[in-house]
Each structure stands twice: as C-alpha cells, then as structure tokens.
Image (cartoon, helix red, strand yellow):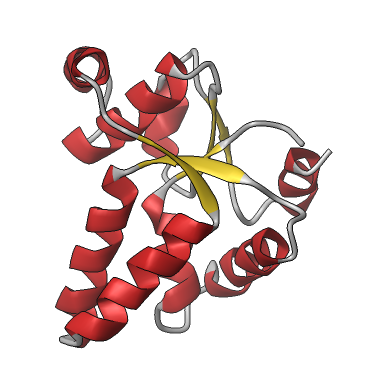
Length: 144
C-alpha cells in the first residue's frame, strides 16, 4: 500500500449531507474498513472532526464516536514541536489555513508526501501530492 495522509474533509463528506463528494468519500472509508486502504493522520484530525460533527449535529456522543471511528482507520501521528514549526512555515508560504498547514507538515515530516483531500489549497505545496477523493483511479493507486 502507498503511504498517504487523510484530510479531515474525507470523513466530513462521508458523514455529512448529500454532496457530490459524499459517495466517493464513503467508498474510501468502506475500503479502509475492509483493510484495502490504510491512511495516516495527525492526531489533530480527531479533534477537528469531533468539533465539526458537534457543530453540525449538536450531538456530542455521536461526534465523539465519529472521531473514535476515524482514529481506528488511521495510523495516528502525534504533533511535535518540529511539526508546529514546519506548519507555521507552510502557513506563511502557501494559501493553507492553519489546520491544513499542520496536516501538511505532519505528512511531510513523516516522509509521506501524499494527502487524500478535496482541498485544492494543498496543490500549492510543491512537495505535497494531493489525491482528490473524486479521482477513483488515483484513489485506487493508494491501495497498490
């Protein structure tokens, strides 16, 4: 399997309302549950997902369950001081929001410069390869 990092958006679209990315993101998570994909993530993905879900649904228990379930599908990486420093550099240099800069920094610092995300802002980072969840062939290549 190819190493890649998840962006929180994969889980958000899979769990959210009807959207063109909902079905592709659900398929990605189904493949992860079958063991066909094993992505990695910053531990920050869990708090970001829990916060998004509780804001959307008002249900803390369901939001916490979503974060736990997401964590079970990923190899999680703790955030280090080096990750935070690199995230600030990425934030300063590219059109990433602060959370996305953290995800990019953790991926790059762990030697896995591929991120599965619909967010085109990641495309600006030359050393990061973004795979769009709607691109079935590219997603399939992550399992190879």
